[in-house]
Amino acid sequence: MNSLIKLRYIREYNLEFPNDFNILIEDIKKKFKIDKNELIILQFIFYITNGEKMIIEINDEEQYQYYKQLYENNCTSIEVNIRNLELINTDNSKDITEEINKMKLNIDNQGKNINEIKYKVEKNQNLDEQILLLNKKIEDINNLYDSKEEKKINDKLLSLNYSQTDNNDILSCKYIENEKLTTTKSTIIKNYVIEHYILIENTSKNNLEWPINTFLRCVNDDSDIYFYNTSERIKNTDSEDKNNIYIFKILVLFKNYKNIKEGEYSLKYQLINDYYGIIGEDYGNLTINVIQ
Image 1: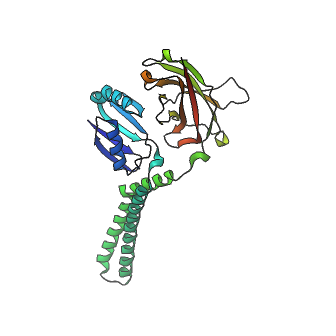
Image 2: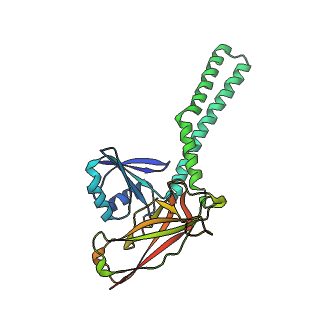
Image 3: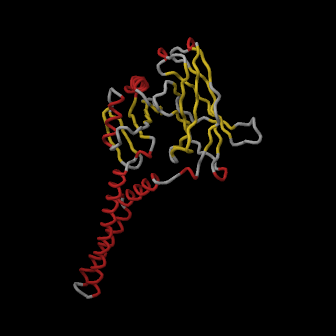
């Protein structure tokens, strides 16, 4: 099955759905000229044949194989999006800038042609023929501005402006410190989860609310514990002096449950919005202490 791989506003490729997660990562990095050491975050959208769709962020081989087997033969299409837009490198920006400059030059040349024809008209050289040609040129340049080319320029300018905009001045947050969780080694079996509640304070200017599609993401940093993305939040009503604290419910899982030993396991998380990107400049931290 072909999967549609998108990089927001920039390029779009069709790739074969590989059997190995690392092959997919390497292929994406080659096509988009992403540094080999750069972390990329992938969001899979499975369009299921019954009309439903499944959106999931996949960070490792185990998750990849699980969802590939589950949905590959039951989907009409599969999309894979690169989530962290800050990975758009300077080479891509230069390519886009050059393309935009070429389009602008084409428009400028059309304008020069019109000025030349106007000059000839003023000199009464082949007046009727020049008027017809002038009208045709004016119609062409009007069509150029109304065409998809202008839309492409606007989209790419928007993309460049967006990638260079610091949105932390608009939306922000503060992560409330978590108490260290404790569990015993004997309880950690397959599909074992720890339910926990993350508290985050909205510190955005002018009391600006986070958009409804803002979600909490577990950072992929090779930790042995993780949780799936969640956008469900409720407002904390227990404290009167802080009415801008929100509660996110998460289910923490162990990756290699058979190899878990006594000790501390930690993960990081951050708040993200599809349009604004990462909210805030810090990470939240959660630690689980495994005892005998």
